[in-house]
Length: 85
Image 1: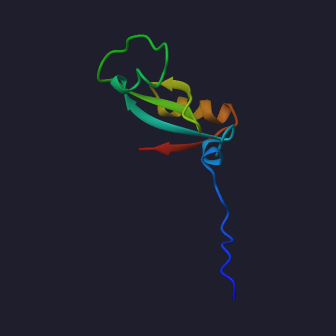
Image 2: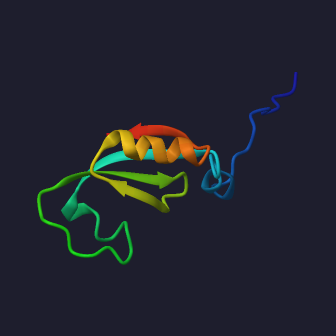
C-alpha cells in the first residue's frame, strides 16, 4: 500500500488571487483606522464609524456612511459582498 497525498496544493500566489474580481469585503471601521487603507483620503472627523468596501486583495473600492450604500456598491460592480467584523 502506498501513501500518496492527494490533497490539492495551494500556493501563496493562489491565495493572493482567491476571489479576485468576484468577492469584496465590507467592514465597519472608525475614521482613525482609514488613513492607511484609503490613500489620498482627506482628513475626516475623528470617531466616525464608516463602511468600507475592499476588493478580495485588500484594495479599497469605496467608503460610505451607510452600510446599504456600500453593499449596493459591491452589487453594482458584480461583486459578492462578505462582511468582516
